[in-house]
Each structure stands twice: as structure tokens, then as C-alpha cells.
Length: 233
Image 1 (cartoon, rainbow, N blue to C red):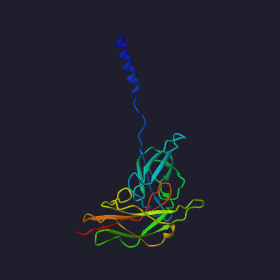
Image 2 (image 1 turned 90 degrees about the vertical axis):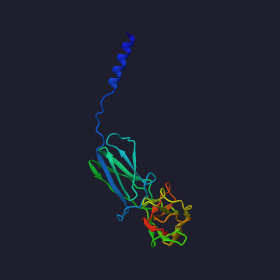
Image 3 (image 1 turned 60 degrees about the horizontal axis):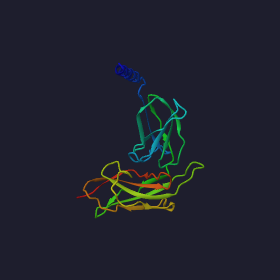
Image 4 (image 1 turned 45 degrees about the vertical axis):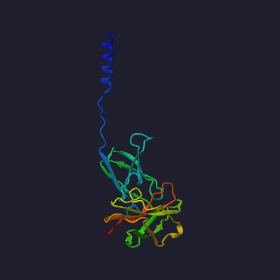
């Protein structure tokens, strides 16, 4: 008799604890881009090492647990699974002078863009070249941007050449070609040249870009645009 009683109690507690979840799933989306003061998208990198966006949901609590997701390589972002709510949204961990976030009401398909001042602008000087022994040479220069009033201006740290067989080339997707080259603030505006340490192994198209970074907490690269080179047979 006791066994029957205990079995009935377990069955009752199991059924009582399995109530149907009546909360709706996330049905809103948030997207946009991050640009400089001239409206130009920032050149970033793809994947988990890219700059991030922090979302703090103040629609339901005053002490929210933050949500994070990444910017894409082209400076855009999108999250299609967001709860409709009021968020405080901040671009973080990127190669720009830190900024405060914005309060955004996310309903349906919401677009919100960020304007920041990148630490550096990195520009090509001509196209990348291939030497007779199939090494890649890139010529470039960089410019330091002025921060908003009161912000510190970090020193330039180093630069690196990134090469890949895919268009998603960057610090997290590159053929190993030596250590970064140290550089100082005095090199601003001067023509710099970097050559791959090793020759390219395959006769194919490679994607190339240059990154320069400053000595801040995150040490993320400000990048040039991506260019292609064709390695001959």
C-alpha cells in the first residue's frame, strides 16, 4: 500500500512540475552598422575575435545580464532573435575611442547605427605586388585620428600583413608570416612597406590586407581594405 502511495505522489509531483511554458519566443530583430564621422564603415575582422556589441535589457529589470554578439567584417551587425524591449546598446572592444551606449526601443525590425572615431586610418599605396620568389609586398600608410575632448590618444604599437585564400582575411584568418613589426607615432603619414616572410605555396588567388594597431587594452587592428593578388604558376 505504501509503495502505491509513494508512486502516486511521485506521479502527482511530476505532472505538477511540468507546466507549459507560456512565454513567447524572441520575435524582434536588431541590425545596423558602425561608421566613422564621415559615414564610412569600419574595416573589422570576422568571427569571435571581432569587436562586439553589448545589449543590456532594461525592459524587465534594473540589473540585467548583458548579451553580447559580434560585428561582421564589413562593419555591419544583425541579431534576428531579440526580445522586444528597451535596451542600452554599446559597441565595445573595437579599434576606436570608447563611446557611451544608446538607449534603443527594439520593436519588430529595428535598425540602429553607431558612429565612432577609429584610432587609425590605414590606406593602401598602390596594389600589393608579387616578387620573383612569390612573396607578397604591400605598401601603405596610416593616419592617427584625434579623439573627442578629454579622451586619451594611445600610442601606435605595430603593424602586420595578413594573407588568406578566403576573403575573410584578418588576424584570426591568415597564413603565418612572421611577427608584427613595431612602429612608432613618428611613422604617421609616411610610406611603409611590408613583405611576407614566406613565399606563397600555391598558384591561386590570395586576399591581402594590412592591419595597424595601437597600445590599448584590446589591441584590435585598424585594417586597410581587402585586395587580391594572383600567384603565377
